[in-house]
Length: 200
Image (tube, rainbow, N blue to C red; front, top):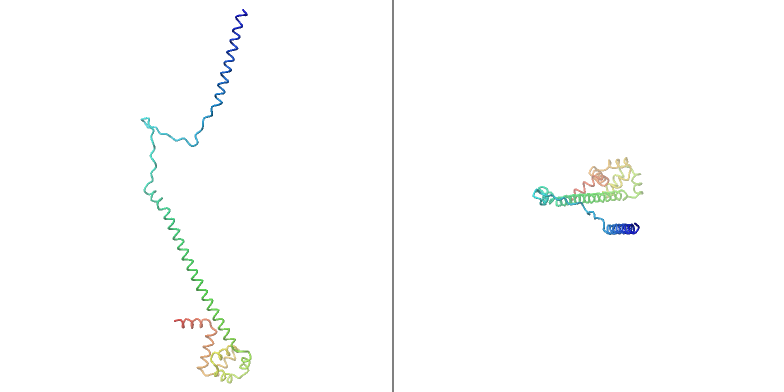
């Protein structure tokens, strides 16, 4: 009985070793294989027709309206930008012209103020005091013999009551001439009107 049992046990042990070896080899082979790669992008959908062949979908074509809009989009934007630039340039030119006009007006006002100041200050305080102390008829006779700008300047330095009394004693043509000269030299509106008359 013993000689028969020994070969069976030995056979069972060999079978177990063979199974273990096969399992280890299978595990090693499975470990060496790389896992399946996932597609990088979305899978492309394939359409199969009734005949079993792949149907290629037609490319989406643009309509004439869409193609026209796409073609004129950039030129229209360029034209709009060019129009806006032209409007800005025109506004800048108008502002520059207005600034030049204001500068010209300012120069005219400064010139007029200088002339008025020089006219009023052309006579000394001593001479003014002398004419202020004279009687109107005597002062009128003296001023009538002076140059018209000097006489007008003297009258502007006197008090209004004294100047009017002296003018009343003067001959009417001389008095009106002096009054017109005083208005011309001291009134800015009259000065501007005279300047316009000279330019015409």
